[in-house]
Length: 94
Image (cartoon, rainbow, N blue to C red):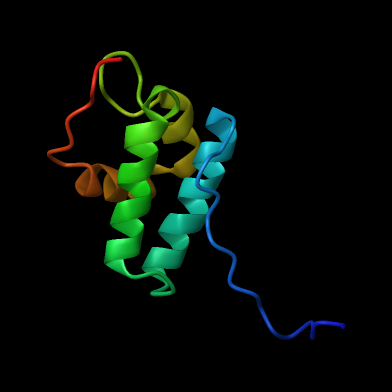
């Protein structure tokens, strides 16, 4: 069972990254897939809201903005895309 090298397998983003850097990497992959129209908007929005809900301590800084490490790693344009998706999202206090 050998897979062809020319055939790309569609890998879904990791839903539970363990570190901030891994979260940023998954955000990059998901944002690039969305921009390339390999992921639809509903799936992308669902993933971003999932990260915000269950991994908020990694995604957000204490002041409520995106974590500086995430901002630096994903870049300005992807950061703007994530902020548009999260517009109106309420962070829960735990």
